[in-house]
Length: 396
Image 1: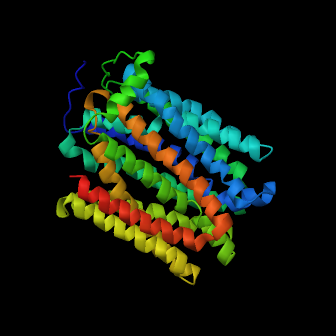
Image 2: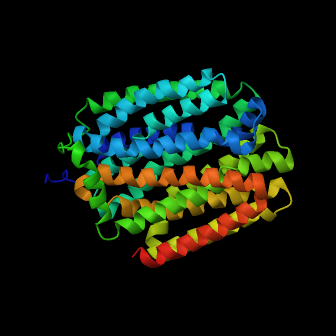
Image 3: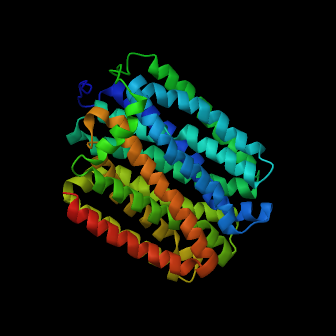
């Protein structure tokens, strides 16, 4: 079995390479989350229910999940940074193509393609960080890398809402395609420089691939991480995806206001990414997770119960902070699951996270159609608190 790359504290060159990966994660996340504030507009424009319109979200999340089973071994075989750069080029085309969709079915299919092409970027970037940064220094680096994801959520939701009220959602997809192309060119230039160390290739036997995946499940602690991240994605994004539609339905807010409120999630997450080193030092890991779970439960209860829209933005920021407190801890564990096949292991981790999202969005869409928003939000908050308590007790 090949040895993992030699690791050291990230130098200035390594920080530059990781910063570009964070920029790619920014665009990938923005392209995935941009549809959240637009669901009511899709439902109105295409004449369907909100639950049906949510296929635009579930299709990209499902494709993102399934594609991980392919990209993990490819990243291990051909180099994680190289695969990220190539898929960023492909994503530029697939995301921009959604701007030409004539109907809901074609839009859902193009979103499925976009989820497939963008699927490699975040998990293989995390795996690359795991290769070049030692475990004891990794969590703050992952938190800084996550700032790209968080800003992507903020950008996708806020600017998506603004475009819906001005230039339209098609212009938003065209803009994201252009941003993807610019980042892809920068990544390719970085890959050709000496700042990105060559990755020792891992021979991949495609026939033995299922055995490798089942082998990961046999590693102590890995099934717990896999189950936790699946349930986390199902509960959190299953519920949070419909917050924009709830704001539009209950308070009749313009799309720009809905996007601005949803963008507070990114602000809360960004606050966490900037304070993560201090948070990690001052709170033991279980207490960290418990606090995050409590913040999630309080915030979802506030979504269901508060009577005025202007009361909600602080709780949207709190839910962003709480989510990343829990998720970054989980990600840090995931980077150490299988050091010799880190790309494959983290791709499975990401696949289950987005598979959970696809299941959760579909299930919560049915709950909203049948029961309404408030019971769904309250149930999600209770579930997230229970999950955090279980993970905090077993994660050590």
